[in-house]
Image (tube, rainbow, N blue to C red; front, side):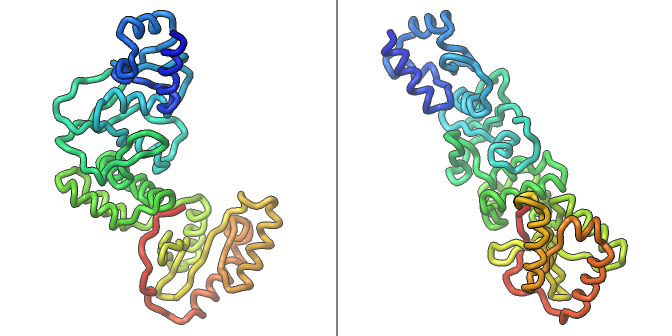
Length: 304
């Protein structure tokens, strides 16, 4: 009996502590023994035909994979929990499980939101931390009708940062799913300029206060992002945080060296604590740079 339970535990160890009834029976564990283990607490029922082995300690990955296992063959984690697992949306609390199931005839399962589709294209699914999940572009497409425009644009940025997902990838997903709602909303989000930090918001507010032109924000050239760019002035500025440096003084000195080497950068201190010198420097930079067209290769970036 111990040997059989060790088999069950081994299967569960590969699946964030979850195992299905079908898997147990395929391993030679009969229904009577499964019921016995449920009775003595060695198995805990989490969904129909899905069990936690040994305990029910909180586990986001276990909850999500358990929902996918309950969905059966072809089920994928999707929508809000998919975005959470891919780090596309903010918030530390994991959303409740949602899955996409490639069949229109599927029973309801308590505790799981089930989205039924006639079919799910192979390119619209992948694996993430051992969990079958819809792809990043498909998650963005599924979330498009739900999210506010700014939140959706931020999700597009995070998709580029963490997964290098570009509009080309998203358009390919749209072509595979042309009747999905939210396509126009998603396309607008892909092309919008947004701010991604309090420092960027403060910098733009400072420019407006002194009547300086507003830059394009968060754009990229050949995969390298910049925070602020004035195409008509040929000027690029980065806004840098010191949170990854050992000390603030050390960070400020590093930024000063980068500026002296033609790397234009400003810090929170420059923008908020010393706005006068910053505006004077910017005014000189903006109007001393020769006007230039946007260099070939500048595109929207999805970055923080």
